[in-house]
Amino acid sequence: MSVIDEKSIFMAMKQDGPFQVEDELSFGRVFSAHSRDWIKRYCSEAVTVTKYRAVRDHLFDLLQISSFDQVTNIMGDSREIKIRSIRSYALLANLYGISGEMSEIRNRIKEYAESADKVIYYLRSKVLANYQSNIEISNEIETTHNPVELLLITLDQRYHKKTRFEAKRKLVLMGLAGAIDQRERETQIEKKFSGFLEFLNQYVWSPKLKIGELKTAYLHSRHNEKDFSCDSVEIIEDISRVDNISLGDREKLTLVKRRLFQFSEKDIPVYVTVRKKDSAAKILKLLRKNEKNPAVAVDDELGLMAVLDTRSDVRRFVRHLTQSAIKADSVMVLEDISDTLTGGFYRGASVGSSSNTSMLKFFARIGGMRVEFIIHTNETYLNYRYQRGIAHEEYEVKRLFDSGVADFLFPKDLYNLDMTQIREKQLQSFRKSIEN
Image (cartoon, rainbow, N blue to C red; front, side, top):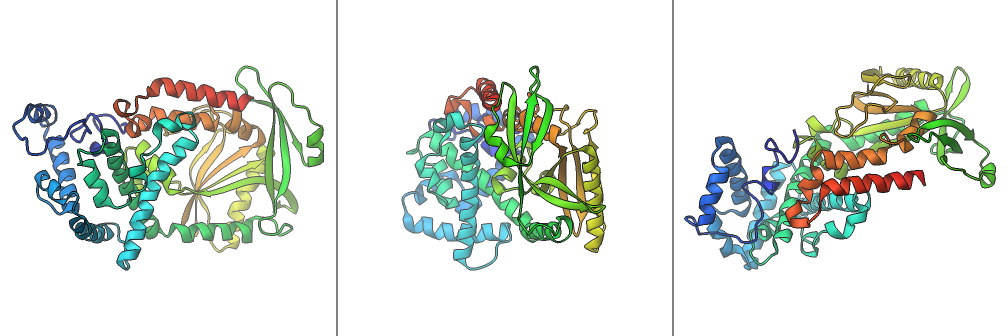
């Protein structure tokens, strides 16, 4: 179920739907040819009409109007806009469970607007970096955070249709940001993230190193000519040697900053990255999943990726985690386990993921938290970074385009971008960057 197909729950955004942004607006011309054509296209199914009315009524409620004809009475009237903005902020505060003074509510809604913009900033800086000028946000939209003002722009004939679309897109993404923020406050995600880091520092990592202390090493790897998978890897802990290494074809030098954990009185190094998904990443995931409820779609808010030297070390690390949980007066329960470190196929549900990805993946439930763990050996981590068809940078490109999110955020009739061609160009670009 794609975000752009007929089952998309984001009907307000679709450029082939009843809220399509067109060159001209036709308020008040109920019996026009345009209106008759619109009815033929969108009123044949009762569910489409019901969804349209729900979105329209939500718009009317925020603007405090009862018909589109009344929009022109608000535009240009700063006093009316201010009055209706105050009311809309109060309505949205109750919708998302925001408490506090009006200034606090305004700041929180502004954060939602900034999160919406960050989605586009992220795509401009990474997956669509070669097209950042094509997809940059209009100045008028980038500087507007008031929902009422954004709504009025979508309905204002003076604005170009691309600008009106960007106003509508920002409102939709703001809605997702609000749902995510509400979910985070309900689940106390910030507190849990802090608690998870405290658990790692107090019970998991070796006391021989200070908190935050890391041991720098390099992985010197040689890669297969056929698919650029890792053929061999040497661990270089004496970093002074690195200056004397001359890399040949299909060789890579990868920096890893490692911690230590103690198992059976032995210090074992592990490269670890701990992350809490930011709002932009969560918004994109909701779009890829065609879902508005973060509780359903975003199950990996807290995550840890670990890289160890051998499969034996992987087993020791997992056992060390469960033993550390006991020390913290909790039981660690492993759920949804997928292990392809020793072969087999990874059956990922995510669009764009490769079945050839090798890793140990599971969710660990501990101390009221549910944390996603992805564990690699050095070889599988290097494949995750560099192998053709598996590399994470390629995966990011595939999931953006194959899920329909690229077309959804940047419709072809407004941005003149052929996403099918861009997908292939970006894959080639990332592949060239990886192998060179």
